[in-house]
Image 1 (cartoon, rainbow, N blue to C red):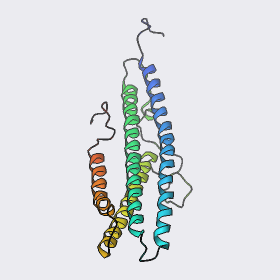
Image 2 (image 1 turned 60 degrees about the vertical axis):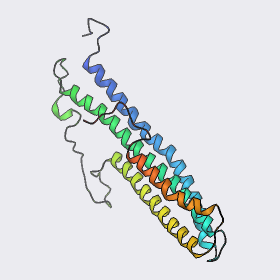
Image 3 (image 1 turned 90 degrees about the vertical axis):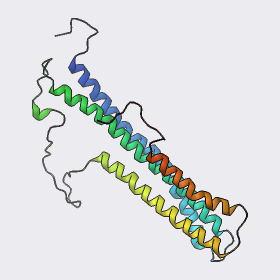
Image 4 (image 1 turned 135 degrees about the vertical axis):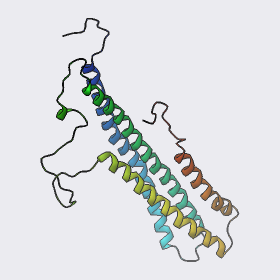
Length: 216
């Protein structure tokens, strides 16, 4: 039966709207991840070129310190993109969980007679036909794609931080062994400060804090 007041919104309409918002958020999460992966592939490519130059250069090569500093700069850029990947994945997960929570609350509401059986409500226990946690099995597994997406970002972050640390230690060792160009020591001192600034500001959520999301 249509509402007497056309401006009123039924729970059914709200539920359908939240489902559309949730679907939109999930779809765009993977589109954003694909776009960000382009920048990460670029970072990996540049880093591969620099690593190849470092490995092929002789022990006494004049530009070895500069190459390690450049590798640290690429690692810093890769670290930033990995952090953005994690933030984006976590933020998107937060938003579609907001919509899921609204849908869950609406489906429990009996005031407007939705009367959805409990087993069909969002948040009910989900039972696929078959499930096997063995990674070599072709059956369905108990995994969350959104959590795995966050894990991808964490793995990339760890890899870039490790690469940056290795090249920074190599740079310090090369600087201690012999003379360097006048601009190289300041850059060597700036590298750890830059990594620290990126990590601290990201940990304090100073890059892209949402003003709408609050702790439950």
